[in-house]
Amino acid sequence: MNLNKIIIYSLLLLTYLGLSKSLSPSEFGISYVFNEESLSSLIKGAPVSVILVDTHSTGFIIKTYYQKYKVVYGFQTYEELIVRTSRAFTQKNKDYIGMSIFRRSEDLNESFTPLPPGSVFIGNRDFGRWRNTSKGKVWSFYRAYRYIPQYTGLKSYTATYNVFQQIQKSVRDNTPFFGFNDEFGTKGSITKREFPAYFKKDRNDQFDLKDYFSDIVKRNFRASRGAQ
Image 1: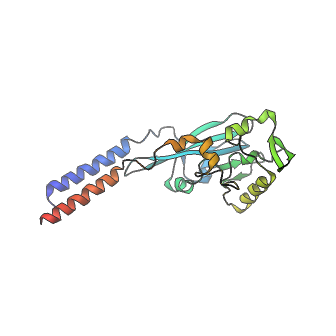
Image 2: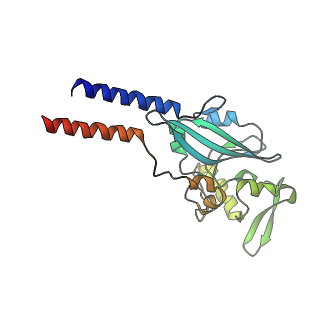
Image 3: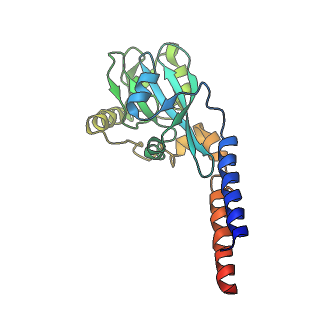
């Protein structure tokens, strides 16, 4: 490889590193979530349900990962929160869009098991009651808390007593529960309807400068070898 090609590759590399930095959003004032414990320390109050509504990365060679949460409280309005995360934490939660990935009950018990959004409120008699129907026992929120299913995306979901029991079992076993018919999670039918912003993005047709750079190197190596 001659000196000119070395200079070209070096300039390309520096350009990509610069773009990776300059195209990343400002991190000033954005909290960093490394794992479950740091998420717990970030979220205050109880009862509360943290719903993962979006995730994305910026940069090319040096990637920065972000998640967006909808934080739904029992006795106040919800808030939206954008945080920077570790790659491992992002990958761990990639299948849980539209699900509660953290909740804290009134007695301050915490759980990180991925569950249907707002699960912490189902079965809590401060917020609703069980009604006997032809489908068995069905959870119904009190009129004063009718905003909770609106905020969480549960307004079109029927939470039966069997669902409630499965939620409790999933917490004990620390096993994700996507609903009996896979209504929740990144592939869930209710998730796609209630949290459509995530699915409007074209996540498969993105220009990746790292791949572009790799392709340039391969093509030039082949050309230089062919000329020898």
